[in-house]
Image (spheres, helix red, strand yellow):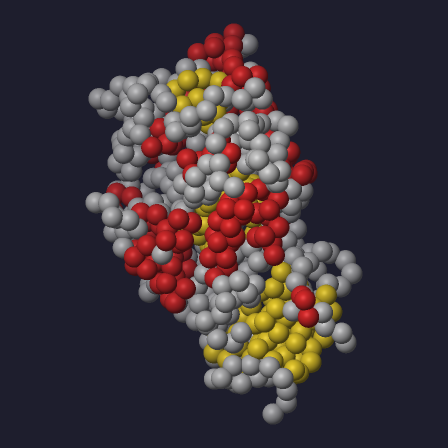
Length: 558
């Protein structure tokens, strides 16, 4: 057997590995049990194979692979996360992107949700929308050095065993912080009648069929051309209401979304969204819905079309939605109050779950566990109760609230919230908003997550409703070398493989790691504490998380 030294990766047995190593952060798991980090007393037991559930195993066969979706949003709008400012050199933008991906890998995250369409613009070459000014400094201006940022992110994420989900804002046409004029290709110039001014923003009118079709075309264009793992849309449907054209705060929200009245009734004078032309056209065409239900139908139609369109193009690309975290007023648990996305954003997230028009829901649960009117755990249980089609529910965490504001979270709040998710059998993941807090290690949050919460790698949960057939077991060879056990893995014929799940036993401890299928040669290094790996078990994993039969690759009999 010949091993290609240029492709060999070292799998260190210690926890202090190089950030750049693709299998960084592997840690040990006792044979008797899996780790219980984050388990909350009194809650339902987490499923076998989760990062928190004890699993009885033996010396010959390791426990189920840990399963948890661990992601972070990377915002490009207003240069929140990447790039740090507009019009950086290509080299600097790539360096910043790699730093984010390396940090994600070092923390044992397994997915990045990258904002590729901040406001009817693009961070990739497109014939449908202009280059984003947040990338190049001027809308419509291509990078000085020709390159494709989205392709770069995808390739580099996959090389590290990370999923890349493309995040689109469905209706925003211009952000309040934008400075350059609209480019000729922008929808506000090409179809100005479907774009409305609202406060300091431009917004595509969801009631205009041409606007919704344009968004659908943009999303499906990316699905066709790029090897993304997911399509992701956020909470901006109809815009958050504002009081006057000049009252919009960050992202156009003038109200306190966590405490505003359930249906918006009260003394405030909200600016009406200017969709009178499309509304009148609907009525003249014989429409019978009232205006609120008509608006919800407009959004629902896009959600359904997007889900079906993605399925038709690539069945393995998952569709995720991250709505505002409080449900509709007539369904909320007792004691929960706050802004109604159902009445104000015309977003019927409960219906999308009920109809199965998504693969994962990531409700933005941006409040502490102890904040009773918007309690994190109560809201999480609410969304689980709506999930009658057994889709993934992976809440969004407000990790960036670890700051110096009056409402700042302590790092322990985020750790606690992850513990809550692990105590619910219907939750196998979460997302951090945003990567900035993890990059800056605010108040030690990255350190706490690595040492307490993400002590080992994890596979994303499987998505069986999109396909449950497992790939064939991999082909494997192993041999003892002076400093460890060398492995060479390859996929068998049949279903394509995305990753390999690797268990290695050192003494009485099993250690878990994930390797991308593109880098199949690696070294299970000896360590001072456990010596050499005594057994190795591997399996192949496809794009939907389906795991093959396990095979024993290496076993040293005592």
